[in-house]
Image (tube, rainbow, N blue to C red; front, side, top):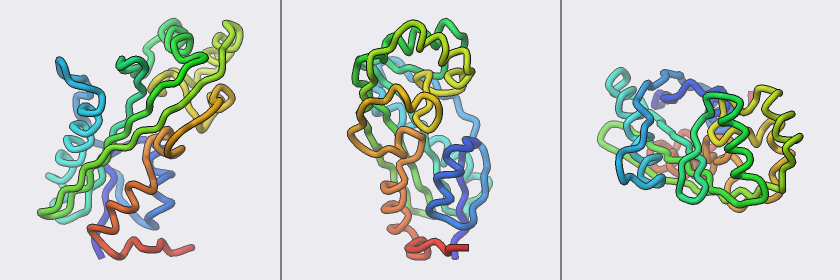
Length: 194
C-alpha cells in the first residue's frame, strides 16, 4: 500500500482528508504564495498546488503526495487572508450581497504520475450590515481565512447559496481528490471505518 502525504499544515484540509484516508503523514510545504504578474487566479491555484506537492515529494519520493491551494476571488481580484481588522471589514463589504468564486487547485504526485486539477465553487453572500461585519471581525475568525470568512464556522451565517462543492470552500474538494486518488491507487476505494 502506498504511503500518503498531505503537503499542508491546514487543520481543515487534514480533517477533510480523514474522510478519504485512515492514515497519512502531514508535511507542511512552505512556498511563496504570491501571484505572478498577469497570472489568472485559476493558474495561481494550480501552480501553487503543484509547487507544494513537488517540494514535499523531494522528502518522500516514493509516497503519494497531495498539494492544494485555495483562493477567494471577487471580480477577478484575489482576496487573501486579511492582515488587519480593517482589511477584513473591507473584504466582507466587498462580498456582501454578491457572488464570488472559491478556487482550489489540487495536485497529486506519485512516482512518474502527476494529476493536477482545479475546482470552482460560486458562493453568494446575503447583504451584510456594518454591525454584522464588525461583530464577525471581533470574533477573530476572519483573520486566518482567505476572503475573511470561514464557511465551516461563524461565517456560514452569511452564505445564502453555493453552486459547486461545499468542501472546496473549506479548502479541499473531497470528491475531486477521491477521483484523482483512485487513478493512482485502488487502495483508497474505501476507507476502513475504525
